[in-house]
Each structure stands twice: as structure tokens, then as C-alpha cells.
Image 1: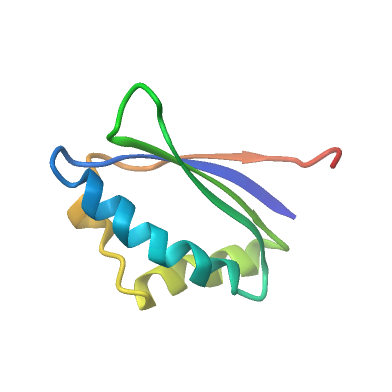
Image 2 (image 1 turned 180 degrees about the vertical axis):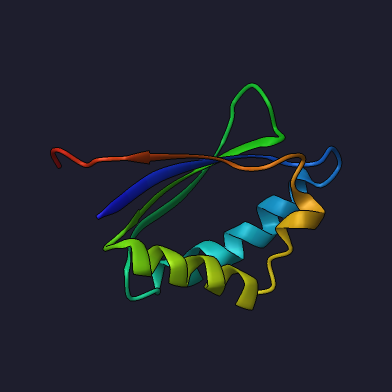
Length: 94
């Protein structure tokens, strides 16, 4: 199991575009065969910061997900203000 959070800071003025785009993408990601969870959150104190909680069955499923985002037409480079901060976790109880 691959469990991670992805923290993204969006360029000023692009917040609503990002949110609208990702609200359409989230259900598509959840359809990926190896996806077990994909939840989008927005920081309460900063509308430019978003966090995704993600779970995949294995590393290969995570690689498929990254490719799938590109196929869905998500141009992260045009929206991100800096690199995403990825944190990987070991799931020990559920």
C-alpha cells in the first residue's frame, strides 16, 4: 500500500480554476484500478493551499495515477506555485 499526502500551493489568481478542475478530476482518479482513496482538501487559513490524501495498492498504481493526471489534461505547471510537497506514510491501522 502506498499512502501519501500531497500539499500544493497554487499561483495567486488560479485558485478557483484549480479547484474547479480538480473537482472534475477527483472522481476520475477514484476510478483508477489501483486507487483506494483520493480526497481533496483546502486550507482554512490560505485559499492557495490544497492537500490531497491518497492511497494506492502499490507503487505501480501510483505511477499509473501520475500518468493518468496528464491524460486528464491537468497542467500542473501552469497552476502550481512551487513544487508539491509529498509525504509518504506507512499505514499501520485502519
